[in-house]
Image (cartoon, rainbow, N blue to C red):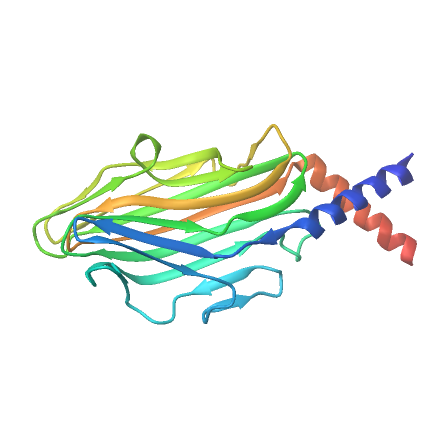
Length: 254
């Protein structure tokens, strides 16, 4: 019986890892205001995309600032002055099926209040039973023109960050706005789900994909920055089973 259990665990791990995949684009950024709208996307073939030894793909914006321009009227809608994104469908440094997605950015609004959306890669995780998830987010708004700044969340309940799984099921809407900064000042907020440090939340169905995004409106001429993380792991029982399976396989080879 133990041998049969080991075989099933190894087979499940192999099947999940084989179907795990980061899809292009790695991130898409759109900006819109009364001046117009524009968008830009970055893929794994673009300069700044780096494949990591553990299977993840990191994208770092090398040419800054990046102006988001309306192609119809050539108006600059907003700018991205910093961007780094990490997408990993299955960290090969670990035996279990674990995915992660992280976004870091800094954005400047144009001459009108500007709505930004930053959506990271749709990550296929393969079918992962007994998965548990965790999401974290932080946001800062800064006044640049001495008249105060306002950052309004565009997600559910006025939130800034959304983490979803299995084709759009919401796992967490984090950091409810609005967030205001005094003239020449800044203001920040952050939130984790689950709230307790290092704790993950189990989901009912097998995990098949994850995706995350920031969505907010920023007052004219001001800036905002944010960071996020969205992580999946198998439940502790599943991780223990897979570790035992791996150990048994090594013993057989010896």
